[in-house]
Amino acid sequence: MSLSSERIVETAVGLLTEYGLHDVTMRRLASELSVRPGALYYHVPHKQELLRRVAHQLLAPLQKPDADPVELMLQFRDTVLPLRDGGDLLLIAYGLDQRIPPVPALEESLQAAGLGADAARRHSAVLMRFALGAVAAEQNISLLSGSQNAVQPATSPGHPQSAQNAAGTALSAAPAAESADLYAYGLRSLLAQAA
Amino acid sequence: MSLSSERIVETAVGLLTEYGLHDVTMRRLASELSVRPGALYYHVPHKQELLRRVAHQLLAPLQKPDADPVELMLQFRDTVLPLRDGGDLLLIAYGLDQRIPPVPALEESLQAAGLGADAARRHSAVLMRFALGAVAAEQNISLLSGSQNAVQPATSPGHPQSAQNAAGTALSAAPAAESADLYAYGLRSLLAQAA
DNA sequence: ACCTGAACACCGTTCAAGT
DNA sequence: ACCTGAACACCGTTCAAGT
Image (cartoon, rainbow over all chains, first blue to last red; front, side, top):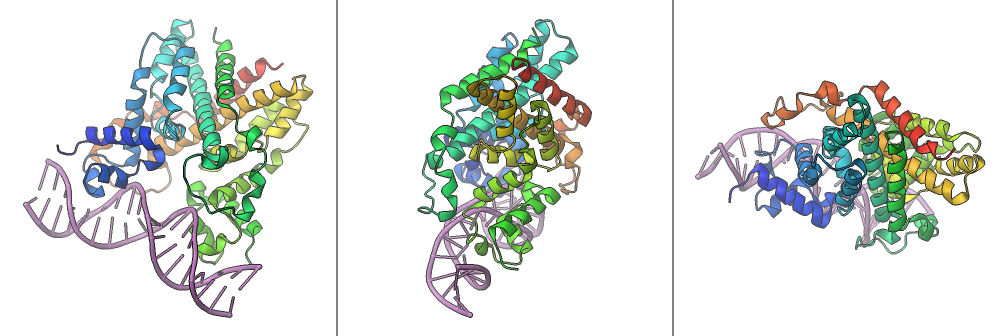
């Protein structure tokens, strides 16, 4: 089977869901597809465009026109959170394309709820900013504060200068249940005015 | 003058404010300080701890105990926004240390406004998540959608595959004035319940 | 048209060896 | 104690040359 942008995107989605954005590199992608890195650039202009397409593919299920705002935003979190560093990807993708799902569906459902076109656009922009920050923060906390990275980064055994982080981990790493509550609470507050 | 963690942090802050996080690399830092890269690791355990200290230094002015929440959050935005990719730095720093400024001052002022200790903690967590997302999104939009990166990245002259981004730039790249409005609006909504 | 080989200009981190 | 030299294992991207 010959190379194509579709195959590259699919392989990138695979690497993302299995290992996280950190492992989605052009070189890793190339070796996964059994080609040299340069070959990818015949099908994709640069890594940014590839990531934009990956994010679009990932969020495609959020293009449903009849869901209510809260449901869309909860599903957004559920989609991005399992990708270890999915928040970083979506901040990039949103920077490249602010009409990524669920934005169009979100605007429609806000308009259906009685908001004007401009108000719906602004409300969804605020909701997306909160969601992006909440998901990225939550992932970074469990990745960076969570009992020494959890997986297997094999750090040097006890460097003296990093002592001040040892205490407070139990308190600072918010339990998963509370993160969901914070997210739901933020959504409700932001949607209160829109009713 | 010999090397020290203080000098390294100061130099990193300098590189950050002049060129952005992208140019804060251990190697660049070393050459700025006229030492070999390995020398830095005698004073700093790893890059993450360095970035945590850089963020703390940057946000030190937000440790004022008597400011009101809106003022603190507006000043947070004003501090981070001028750093080209300051949002990325603060997502990392917040992941490493959720008590970074202005969090303690924020909790105090929310308690002074009548909230219980736990409610104040949760409210400030929600506010920080929104602020981090808003600033990071705003910076990424102007960096990634803003008329081909604005500075001087010298991209190849017109690669065919990236045509779909050409249209819509005028609409998608929100003017700076509207970003400030979205931010203020989000803050007000999130603080409405806290009154 | 599509891909390889090889290079360019970088990363963070480690560590024996020098002073 | 503090730093260098040199390496290890990587990056994204370009481009002449091959088929």
